[in-house]
Image: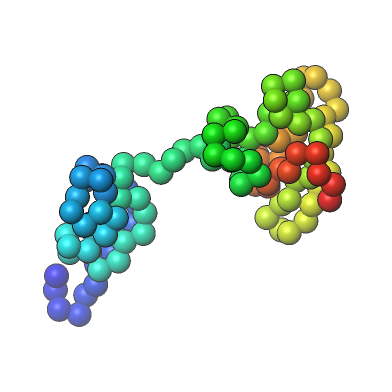
Length: 115
């Protein structure tokens, strides 16, 4: 690197993953990068199967709490990024699951909870 300059890499490293590199998750350092923010492997896990941490890993493979008819819930509390809470209740069969409605608003849905 040129004197007085620093390097940074942001995003996906894509060099065989940390399990195949001696430096593991620290691989960008030995490769010469001063700063790294991203994923050493090819991609991050694309779906949070805990639905925001409200259930054990693998509970909700779709990434949100499904309707009660599919093992989820039809009512609960949606905690939004602005620190407000909105109660959600399924209104009609053609409507998206309340867990999905909350997720698309950027919230965390807690099944059968009150705000």
